[in-house]
Image 1 (cartoon, rainbow, N blue to C red):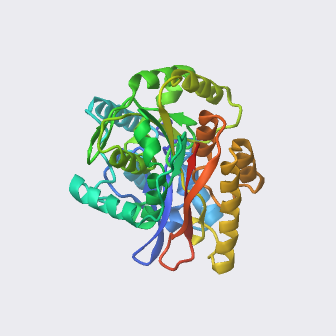
Image 2: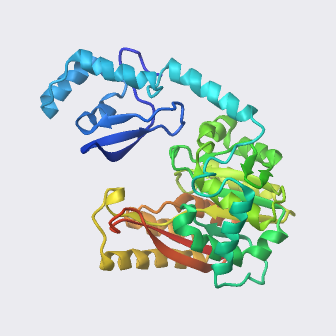
Image 3: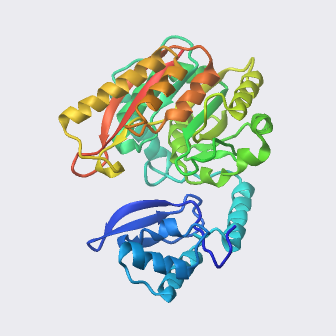
Length: 395
């Protein structure tokens, strides 16, 4: 925690927005400790870097004047910092106490409630069933007739990615029916500095509760260390990358309370001892069980919505070729080649599912893949930004 005289922001995600005609930043709190929307005017954006625990308000005001030509009084800086503190955005005792309280409440609840219900999909089982069945009926594919090990599912909202969800989940119908344990590995959008984040909490959908296999979670936590395993557990509360595929899983299993292990995946280095220990523990623990892996990941995030240049037809085709190359590596089960290909181009397309796919491929062992849908979904109202999504089954 920071010295009160030297304010330090907690890890936040500044999202650029235009508010009342002015460039501003919405300060998204990954831990969702405060219930308020915090907007920071664009000219004050340097404050996000300056509040790092090494500067007092006098120093920050002087830097604004010297480097940005913005005359700010120390009292003004202090007032802004106080407002951030009131919203629990500073790394201090107030925020830590609320974080502990929030974590205790999350763990004490009977289950994790679905945070996207009523937004990305209907909150009631009847309308949800009709919507997902409509998607499945529109998917011109048949269930794969062979045993399977897992699948790659999108985690984009259903309105944009519903057709791809339907193609991959319909292909996997028989595979899902044959399994009794589901390892679900999703992108940690908020706590990417945590390689692996576990939870012992059960996950609810509008169909009921999917029980987390807490015994298996205990085994995995022991392999990577309890503190590391649960350091970012609160990120599970609002993370959609697990929730959206789990709704499809619950739908296809006809609302049965099948066992799941929800894993959020941040960045890590291949060969990391903790990751290797996790994989060894997982493979040993699931030996003899009918286990199916659900890997949740989208592909490219490119265009102005993600800090890039506007995309036209030729650029979108280049993205599609790049995506196809990556999916081809997954088809031959080359997890190391997949990761190397992304590293070689410095992840210029901002692939969202990199680490869940790598971890899932390593956990499944030798597999081959089969594509089940691909789409480029709009990510702005001009059609100049896209998120690409794909489905794939592994056998």
